[in-house]
Amino acid sequence: MRRRYLSLLLLCMLAAIGCRAKNSVAPMTAGYVFMLPGDAEVMAQINLTNWGDTRVTSFTYTLYYMDSKESEGPMTVALDTPLEDGETRTMGIAIKAGKTLGKEDVLLNITQVNGTYNEASVSYTYITRCTVNKMPVKRVLVEDYAAMWCWHCPVGLVATDALARRFPDDVVAVSVHKTDDISKVVSPTVYEGLIDRYAATLPAVWIARDNKAAGYDVTTAYQSEKSKVTYMNIGVSARWDATGDAIDVTTEVEPCMTPEEGSSYSVGYVLTASGLTNPAWRQEASYAEYSSPSYADAPEEMKFYADAANYSDGYSKVKGMVYNHVAIESKGMERGIANSLGAPYAMDEVKKHSTTFSNISRYGVIGDKSKIEIVAVLFNNKTNKIENAARCRVDGYGGDTTGIGEAVGDKRDGDDRMYDMMGRQVYGKPAPGLYIINGRKIIVK
Image 1 (cartoon, rainbow, N blue to C red):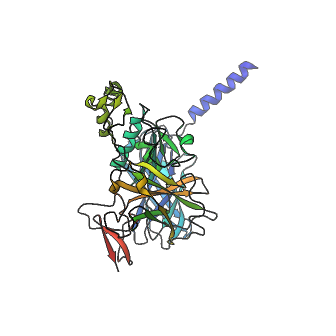
Image 2 (cartoon, rainbow, N blue to C red):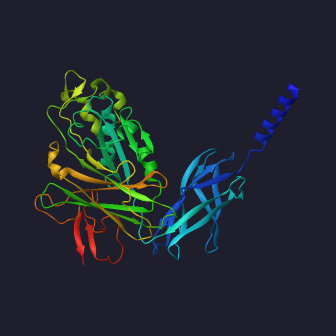
Image 3 (cartoon, rainbow, N blue to C red):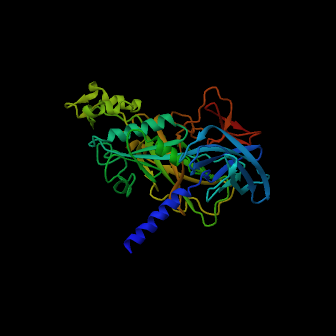
């Protein structure tokens, strides 16, 4: 009996090997593709996997637009570089523009591979084409939990600073200190209830609270979150009040698509400051570690920790450290402020929420008020995820009371394109309001 079962198993294995498909390509899409009404077409990013046992030099596909019941194709793509056995590659497939605003599913079907029938068990995928008046702008919240007593924490500090430097338009950075000299001089309730949850061990760099990234280069984790689709735009503005000791904040949230029924959103805030330093501060570190060859490819921010001149008390503590994006005070950063963005939500309809950070002068650790930023985080209460984020500097300090914060990262030298306060490019004649051209705010009446 045992011999019989072994024989059957061997026959099944041989059959599986013998029946492996020769020409087999399966597609997979990221899902949503956004375009404006005036666009001729948009490139949908498709992952193609070769499940066959031959190299793929060409494939043929068709498109079917579900709502309009229109078909395109067959169209054949010749690959300059063959798709190898087992390889997955991302390619762009052109999708034509929609005639009306809204969502429409497009069926992509790969019908042939190398000029013959596609043997893939699933040869198709769906692309959701979204035709919108305004394109979504996705920014990624990066929260670094650190402490001066943690000698591993420079890795997280470097990773966060490097990411903010490399992607200034798309990264919203917050650095939260745990039971150290900085934590003693910021609000005692900053990130209340979150530090123990997300920083049980240090360092802890969280990407949108969905991925705890490791190492001095967290670019891959950031890019993964950046690729996730949102159709909820968020912008924030801030100004000093007449006393110069309080900051009035206004957040605008605008869906570029009407959210699903039952969706609920709320907003939370962080007051951050950069350039914090103190001659008495010492950051635990390791010269032997950070000057070693294993850190040769680390971002330029790591050079500070690899320089023996910056160490005191032997080679285990650095002096002269400058801390950036430090969380000074926060509001609603667990799940957002309750009822801050009440339903319903509709395409192109702006929801606003305002708050005030008061008595800023009590935070003597802030040496330069011009380096204060306000972070606004959009929480999706239906998915319990962070949907989007924004940050801005604070206007009005030193007598300027324009009332609108400069959106951080919006300056583009030599660029005469127009952007709204959410960082989106404006096409055609703009509506009355405040806009940014080459980093300068202008008012259109």
